[in-house]
Length: 79
Image 1: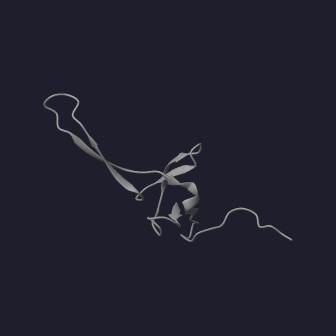
Image 2: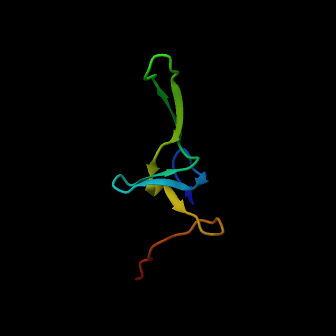
């Protein structure tokens, strides 16, 4: 589970459905919805509208802990 911390969908949270490590992007369920209009392939068929979630940059999300609160990961610099 992650929470969106910046951008147009700030404050929303959801489950990570897919990751794109080379692009540094993640698809989060319920965040950044989009629609794609598909043309008919055969005569007599109807076109379709497919709803899906667009990937967002991984730096715009933060992991949620077991209790639903955000967590920080990594080491702090000690001086």
